Image 1 (cartoon, rainbow, N blue to C red):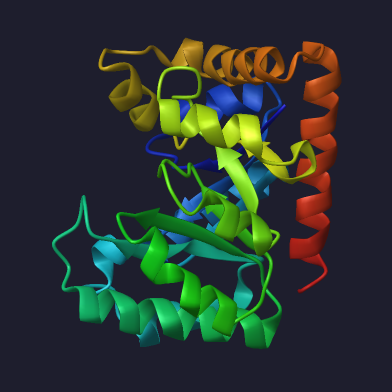
Image 2 (image 1 turned 90 degrees about the vertical axis):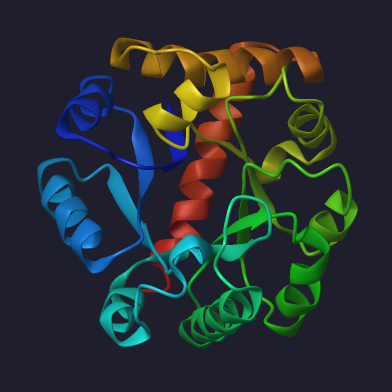
Length: 242
């Protein structure tokens, strides 16, 4: 099983991931977080790391501090534009986003996208910098076909089956471009609007597979195998850039 996008908030969550041998891509949004994750990766090589200046921090994390990490990381992200959950000035977000898109294209590094309320506005920039894009937990009712036309990959978040927009994404995109994600235990708790124990982490990933399989009327085991194949295919794209 895989978790294509997560945030590791504490060692206990990491241990839960390790216990169940869940492969995953953990996000680093600062130099400190990157070095912390590198220490965990040394203990558990199935953990990969993405790194990028998140739109929420586009005016606080400096380019010079992150550049060596962006050059080293196998995946850039999560990066993007956010007009919903973020007070960072949009001009600053766009400036930092485009610099990272440009770097990703130059270094041939796949990019993990965070887009909220700016899905339409991001499209011209993505077309300007063709690359392998992984769209994290897409939850917009519109523009999905535009992202599909760019041959984007998509992670399906734990709200699939509950959130109509996320369910639409899971139903419409190609199974060959689909991955699953938790976004971390705190995101699962936010999604469920209740306390979720760490021990339930794997259960929520399994639930996503169950719900997606039902949408496509295929066997869970078949979908699970397809998703793992997809994950390894995506990783091959990432690691061939290093």
